[in-house]
Amino acid sequence: MSERILVIEDDPSILRGLQLNLGMEGYAVRSAADGETGLALARGERFDLVVVDVMLPRLGGLEVVRELRVDDPDLPVLILSAKGHESDKVRGLQLGADDYMVKPFSLKELLARIDALLRRRRVRGETGVSRAVKKVGPVELDLTARRVAVNGAPIELTAKEFDLLAFFVAHPDRVHSREQLMEAVWGSRYFGTARTVDNFVARLRHHLGDTAEEPKHLETVRGVGYRFNP
Image (tube, rainbow, N blue to C red; front, side, top):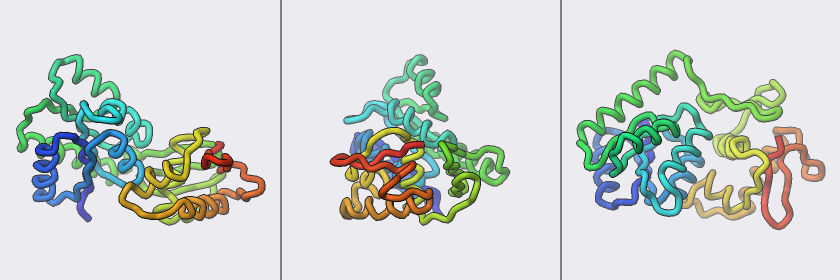
C-alpha cells in the first residue's frame, strides 16, 4: 500500500507541484489549501506524513502542528515556510515539527527529507520501539496498531468507529456538533447526514457500555451535539 502524505499549502503552484512530484514518487497524496481543512483531514483519515506551510488562512500552520502533535505524537510533520530566521525554525521544531524547510526549496532535497522521515517511521513500526497509545478514562487506544481496549478488555471496531472514538478521546470534555464530527471524521467530501453521526455514536455507546438513557461517556448535549466524558 502506498504511503499517504497530506500537503497543507495555500500557494496553488507549490501545491500542484508537490502533488505531481509526490505522486510520481509513488505516494498517495491528499491536499488542503487552509489550516482548518487540513487539520480536519488529518483527524479524519490516516496519514504517514504531513507537509504543512506556516502562513495559512483560517488556521496558522504552527497551530496545525501543535494540534497534530497532541493527536498523534509519532506522526512525521515537515514544515515549509518562507520564514528562514533561526528563531522561526526553532519555534517550529519546539512545537513538534520533525523537520523545517525554507522556501524556495530544492525539490530533490524535500523528497530526500520526506523519504528519511518515512524511513524512520517504518523502522519504529517494525521494531515496536515507539507507539502512539492514548488512555483516557476506561478507553485505551493504540493509534499505531489501531487497537482499542475498554477497561482492559479488547473490543473490535470498524475503521470509522475507531476514527470517531479516537477523535472523542483526543478532545475530552468538549462539545462537538454533528457537522464538526462529520467534517473531522468523514471529511468535507463525504455527503452524509447528521443521522450518520447519530448511528455511529449509538454503536460506540454499545461498545463502551453506555445507553442513550444513561450515557456514562458519550453524552448528548441537546441542540448542539455530543461530548466525550472520560
